[in-house]
Amino acid sequence: MSVNMWTPSVAVNDYTWVDVDQTFYTLIPSRFPTVDVFARVANDRSSELAEIESLTNPRLKERERLMNGTQITDGNGPLLQNWNHAPFTYMNPEGTRFFDADRPALELSADMQTALVISVRKRETFLVRTAEAPIGLEMRELSRQVKGRFASVLDWDPGLDLVERRRLGREIAEAGFDGLLFRPAERPSGMCVSVLKGEVLQRAVQRNHFKFVWDGSRVRVVYSFSSGAEYYPEDLRGMKQILAA
Image (tube, rainbow, N blue to C red; front, side):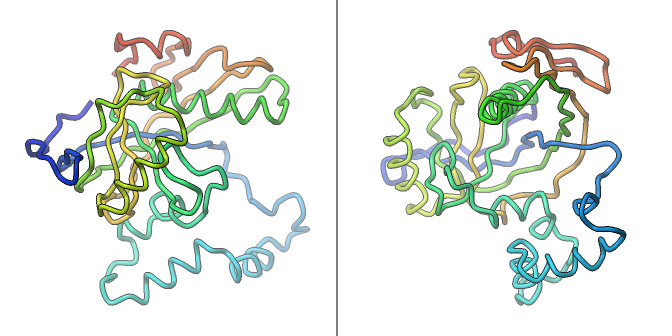
């Protein structure tokens, strides 16, 4: 985990805040090789279908709006990178841990072990809902630097009721913070950040790849392509740092 480089906390509107400048991690689904999104229906006309889809794609519309802004001078800047841009463009109908569906947020973990635990839990929730048969899911690790002013709620109970979490989250957002730091219920010894503003993100960097082995009811094991190591989710949830560097 990166060394924390923030200023001492001080009280602001009943919350403490910290200036964060640290690397955080997450995982996203991945495929090898890359799959053309229109491959099954395109009949060799993928480019035409992609052009039609782009006319109503909210991410591309928002990117175009940002590119026309006076503050955007680099088309390859962090704010326009898809991995940083899309989370704040496509609304999650269920909302996130601390915020309702109308306030998008990106949750990242301060270390990869915590990121894996949270990703496993999210994948399990999705696969149970869809009654997915046994399958191997390939996941890609992303890291990015986060630099901004965040409310620190590390002393909150990780098991806090959802309604209360959302109420407190609204207070923090309305106070103008870039997001908040918290302890995740999936691994209370870890630390995560919930980011409200894409402007505080540096470019995301691709790192290791993992495979989640889903047995039809749970993710049984996590395999690291880079190290060849296998990890059991129940071990990753513990306080001990077991993930190979």
